[in-house]
Structures are given as C-alpha cells and as structure tokens.
Amino acid sequence: MSTFSTEPTTRQERRRRTEACILQEARRLFAEEGFERATIRAVARQTGVDPALVMQYFGSKEGLFAAAMKGAHGGGTARTAAREEIPSAVLRDVLAKFEDTDDREAAVTLLRNFLTHPEANRIMRDEVLCSLIRDLAGTIGGTDAEVRAALLMSTVFGLALARYVLELPGLAGAGRADLERLLRPALEALVGDE
Amino acid sequence: MSTFSTEPTTRQERRRRTEACILQEARRLFAEEGFERATIRAVARQTGVDPALVMQYFGSKEGLFAAAMKGAHGGGTARTAAREEIPSAVLRDVLAKFEDTDDREAAVTLLRNFLTHPEANRIMRDEVLCSLIRDLAGTIGGTDAEVRAALLMSTVFGLALARYVLELPGLAGAGRADLERLLRPALEALVGDE
DNA sequence: GTAGTCGCTCTACGGTCGTTGAGTCAACGG
DNA sequence: CCGTTGACTCAACGACCGTAGAGCGACTAC
Image 1 (cartoon, protein in one colour):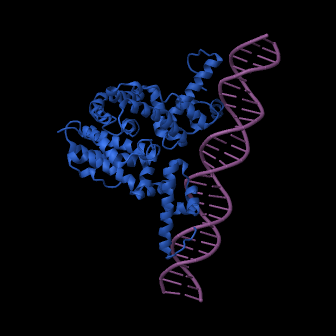
Image 2 (cartoon, rainbow over the protein chains, first blue to last red):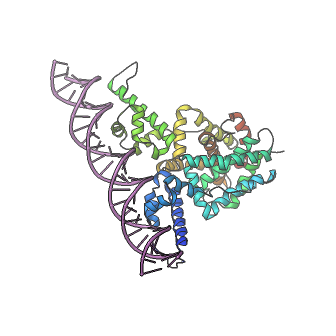
Image 3 (cartoon, rainbow over the protein chains, first blue to last red):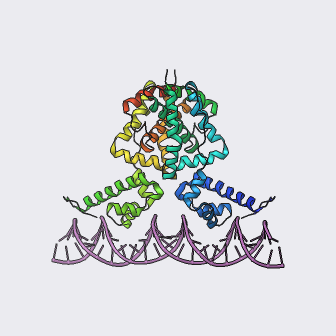
C-alpha cells in the first residue's frame, strides 16, 4: 500500500495501521453502499491494497463486516438512568452516538444494513434493543412497561434514521437543543406518570 | 408458466395474469431479501417463468422494482386533518397501511429497501415524506412547525419499522388500542399547544 | 551474511448475475 | 384454414463477484 510521510515502521505497527485503514474504508463503503453493493475489491482499491489481503485479514466478506461492526453498540447512560431521567438519557445516548465521528460510521452502517443483512439485524435486535428495553421496562414499571420502553426505543430509532440516514430536511438541519426541547415532552409522555 | 385449473384464457387475460403473478412474487422477494439479493432469476423461478420474460415486461431490474413499488404510498387522512386530529390521523394512517394485506408487502418492501436503494430512498423522502411534512407543518403552525412535523413522521416511522420489520417483541404483539393509548399523548406533545 | 518469517501482491477459478437475440408455439383476425 | 401476431422459452454472452494458492520482497533473528 502507499507509504506515509512519517514511518514508525516496525512490522506489527504497519500491520495494525493497514488493518485500521481497511476497516475505516470498509465502514465508509458499507455505510454508503450497503452490504451487497460494497465489494471487497472496492474496499481494497480505496485502501490501496490487494483484495486478497482483506480476505487474509478478515477471512471473508462476512468477517470484514462483523469486524467493521464491532463497537457499533456501546454502553449508554439510559440503561441505568433513574425513571425521570430516562427521556433525557435515551435522547442523549442516540445523539452522542452519532456525534462521535469514530462511532458514527459504524452506527450508520448498522442502521443502513440491519434491514437487509441478517447479522446486522440480529445485532440490532438482540444485542442493542432487547436487553436495553428490558432494563428500561424494569425502571419504568407498571403493566405497560415493556410496550412503553419499546416505544421509547422505536421513537429515538426513527429519529436517528430520519436525521442521519434519510436526512429529512428539517431534522438534519435542526440543532441538538431544538430536538431536545421538542422531543423530550413526547418521550416523557411515553414514560408516563407514576 | 403453470396453467391454472379454470382458464378464461384469452391472450391478454393470460398476459395480465402472469404479469400480476410476477409482480406479486417480486414484491415478496424484494421485501424478504432486499433489492440486491433478490434476483430476477429467483422471481422468474418462483413464478414458473423464464427470466427473459421478466426483462421483456419490465425492461430491467430497476423497472421491475419501480413497478413493484407503484401504489406503495397512498393518500392518508393525516394530510388534511385538523390540528387536534393530527396525532390520531398519522397513527391511524400508518397502522392502516400495514393492516391491509395488499399494501402491506409493498410497504414493507419500501421500508426494507429505502435505506440501501437510491431510488427507494428518493421515493420515500421526496414523494412521501416531504410533501406530507409540508402539509402537516402548515396545519401545525408556529416557528417550529416543520421540525415538529418531521418528528411526528420520524416517530410513526420508527414505530412501523420496529413493529412490522424488526418485529420487536412488545411492539409486534401489542394491540392497536394499546398502541394508540400509549403513543397518542406523545404525538400530542409533539404537535404542541396552541 | 543467511535462513526464515510475514505482510502483501498476482493470477486465476468457479459461480452467479443482468441482459440479449433467436427461436417456438398457441391464440388471434380474416 | 392460414398467415400473423405476440406471449413465452432457450442458450449464451460479458461482467463482476468472493475466494484460493503460489509467489515476491522487505524486515527480523541468529
């Protein structure tokens, strides 16, 4: 691959670096094109590397995808938030996820692919949403707790999709403060009174 | 293709019928597999027809997809609803769309593909959401009208995705009445007071 | 210096895809 | 009854894909 200007070039250093480059480019392409359209060849070409090297590192296209998804879901503050803090917490978590540039590409990739790619679907449902909903429902309490928690997730989920993927005008341009001001009353209504 | 038991077999009658069969199977496959994974060959095989016939009818895979999407978005009641009726209307519209079995497949197809397929993305954003948001914003009024309207759409949007596509436990099983009871206060909060 | 390791490239295979053009056969119009 | 039309099939092309294996060349260890 193309060498850089400054080279702390031990062997493993270079290896780590090219692997990181491949992963970064993979995330970008998966996010832009989707799993099927994004080709290993394109990832390799953009990185300036041979397709076979990508195979050697990640075993298969699935492996590359899985590696690109690692760390796409991370601990949020909502899971342990107090009942009255839940609306702010879920909103803050989802916005924070997409502000951090490192996570952002992985998160967008996950969002763009979870509908059509089984692995992404499983990750999204089982490792992100289900356990989070269970914890939230425990904090919310009451007979409809699980439905309320699921509705909370579906709402911020729709927000992320509309704002960061669909880029709906009016949402993509809105500021964080405006979103919080307008959306929090709705989220509080979903949590309900106690 | 395989002939049916009763045959009102005029030429155009048969043509209309096979075309409908192809479209139905195409919708199913596009919804299940996504645009890329769904192949013309698979559609043809399931229909019991030669792939070339699908090409002859719809010109290209894009053409088949566009034809399968036609009528996927239809007039809802929300567009012309009064201000205080908007929450009920948007909710009723989205639920109704997915209860009707005919529309359901097309709607799920659109949802599953708009993330990864540019054409579906454009349709969803420009022909469905944008004009609807503009109308809703006009009815809602005030300085944040457009953001409020967009948030309304993103919320029911997230609901549809979570309930009908992701099939989140707790939402997929919930009844319409429960959903309306729990979600309407949140939607009313989004519309805001006047 | 020399053998060995390892990051990396080159070349090629097998498979599936969308798409095409020629050909077949039953339904139609006169 | 016969020529024509048009729905439909068959066989094939070219492209691109994921993947495999052999080979190269620079770095490392002795």
